[in-house]
Length: 254
Length: 254
DNA sequence: CGCCTGTTTGAAAGATCTCAACTGTAGTGG
DNA sequence: CCACTACAGTTGAGATCTTTCAAACAGGCG
Image (cartoon, rainbow over all chains, first blue to last red; front, side):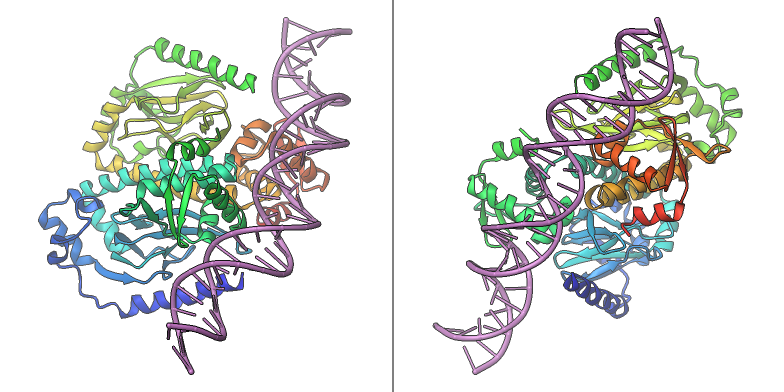
């Protein structure tokens, strides 16, 4: 417990550092031209000129794994596109129990536009790069560009659908089903290497925080799946799905 | 268990009936003029003419408690504003475990615009009235009216925040905290009568389905709260919060 | 009055959590 | 290259919480 608070403390200092130290170089058009997520992110439907204008209000920022960009309850001053890396969205109870409420990947959007408060913390799980905008300026730009707002709406509606689907998992699935579902979900989102191994962006504790379980229960379930031959493990973070069909059955409680 | 399936079956027939039987009278401007939720719903920022145009593609529909308007997994053909009443959004696992993923009230928006599938069922908890639009026509209208899309975006962002906050409850709170949190939430949303009693729109089973518990656990927790003098009960659905402060403490696990 | 349905209560079983010890691995420095 | 350290992850045993199964109770309605 102490450790987790220390980590958070440390990350906060790091984040402050990044914010202060990042050169305010803007994202001149040259960045967008070779942007890896240009066609998936919410800016996809903007034309060259509009994209240039949006760029002028934002800047690129690099994060190290563990750094926190936004804090639950803080006033909402930043929004961003994820260019590379994986981040978690999380909330906590007063006494420190944590729940991860979302995991975001490259081309996803983070932050709370059109709202005063950031409802959850955002922390990098891997090293990451963001295209960061001051919220006020972004809000103004969005209001003037319906194409952008429409994309943002689509994305938010999708997020809401996914989040509600996850509520079924949290409220009604048992530990076995939860772990199986997460593994399948990660497999869908992450690219496997040539051996079919996917590198999880989450530690055991973070898996527990996504699933609403304890670290021990997660460890036991993963151990069981391995012993049953449904998955194989490769190091701490590596997983290979051996028997997909059976894993899918387990995710649904069969 | 059987009973719950029967109910669903029955509701499906009812819904089909409503859809077929509802006169396609349109919502001519005269409806909007005296619409109870006009200034809170997503149509609030439209001018008279635009509102008239929107009305022409929609119609009013009345629902009885228990009727289902949309079915999880069905193709998304309808969206609606809630004019009056309370409805639940729910999903289920293959083997029939249900999770309520949202409760909507007057002036809220339901349905899945800009998407092919309805991700959850929508069922009336009380008698209700809707302003119902075919999805295709609504989508088209929305794309041409940024003010409407902006309102919809705001609302969707708020829904997402609320949903994520509920994930913390589902994943990390115990039964006592869950029940206390729900009661406070309902108190915030529902108007109490002169005695301070709020009429819950949910049965015990539905409360269990919102909180990810069983009906027996809910019953025991409510019984405990009553015995402790934190709440008082009035009939099956009536609740009065006697000691708000203590209830708030319990919601946070103190 | 008796039935139907929703709710409450009790007792026992089962799942997950808690606490504690142990293991393995990645990283560090000699 | 190896020894050592630090820490993530695993395992075990017992406690705790919630569920399950069963039965009793209560209010509304024919």
